[in-house]
Length: 594
Image (cartoon, rainbow, N blue to C red; front, side, top):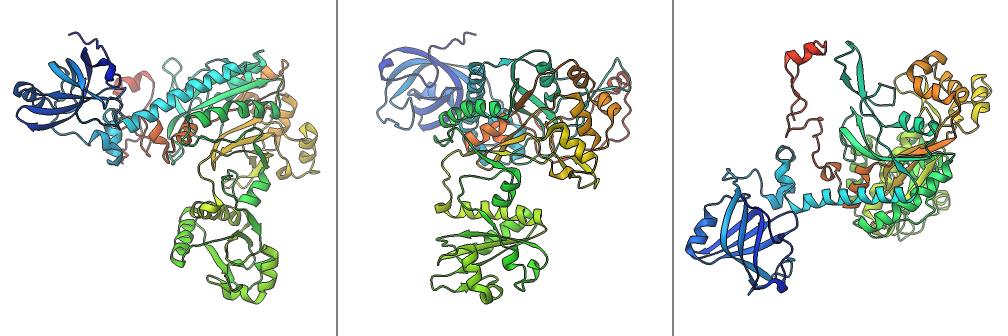
């Protein structure tokens, strides 16, 4: 079977008229006009070409072929009578002399129409992903992903970084999520773990004398799916720099990312260096989020002293946050809809009132605000026509609810959100420690390998009760784009003495550190350089660039929300012989269905 084609299905133009050609692809559609006339669309990776059958035998040949069969067509290129300006090959068509079936589709009915697969049920799309990927819209997201990864790789090499791959089978370590465990056949009862990130390995590379490392790293975490997070595996642009500080990391990404976002993004405008830097506590207070969408010009104000005693029950004894929106044009029905959306997303209610064109307080909780109208107008800087959204609760609850309300109001009010751009910001100075919600005890807030601001001295003061550990900040930072957290990073703790002191505060002694992180601890005792790094998520980057709301749209073969690959039937049961070899006994078998 000779399959070598002369041209692809996006290649033929007017200059090819009269040439004998051979194209190969999937038969996308057949439109039979009469017994001796039919129009056929052939599609390959590159595009589509129209083929015109003008004899009864040739029409019958195409009619006998199921759609989505792969075929080769040999024929003559000619000019089309009715041109299609929306098709790259719309000026020409091919008159076939020979048609050959290369791969027959043996199904009369497809699970969905290929070009409308995105309208199909997600379960069907995932089960027949190989058909879904034939849809040019879906395929283009994967092409975009490939182009972005290639651009990232080229940019990092251009910045002097060396690409080094790190192990996939490694040791389990406490990184904040559940590990995927791999049993060892040769070591009964012992397990490898798939890396949640190459964190320890990249730091060991710095201790080994490598100066600038990167890789497009696969990471594995047994966690639940979200719109911007795929269960199972994900990829990140992992990087680390020796003899570097926070400023060095920032400058690299501020050079690497904006050109890629401007070139490949849905929008062609991206922040220029330097990106805005916002301390964590300020971000929570001013924007109600540690991943604020900086395209929105609305900010959160504290109104606790102003409205906490206004007589409105939900405000009594709570923190009150306010968002002022000028030139607000929403109806009462739209306002109620916004408040309902906020409650669904945050689990907490939002309240409101308006300062109308007549200078009156109206709507929502107006009757509680009216008696102190003058103080409210002055304190919040209200202008006539303003809308005021309000949240309340314990401090963090009031802040986070205000963050959700801010996003909803920004999306609703075009005057307050410039949607068609990529706006980056750095969130800096994260708390080193927090009180765990489940344990009620002091825990690391983010990365336990981060350098505390204040070094060994501040840790010793905290251990002696002379400083509040919750007030200690770390050289940790997040990169945020359009309200999506792209990555976390940090200046690393490369000093064993500081490391031991940091872990001591969360009740882990020297032996615990040595046993949990033996390689890194020992390596640092041999003299490690100061180093820093970060790891922007490739999947999230491509999701933003493609303008998609779901991360599954930019992953070639994604799992469903229950971490199942319904196309490959994974996870699946294995034979007892395999379990016996691994010294594993299954205590429970359970089917998890969609």
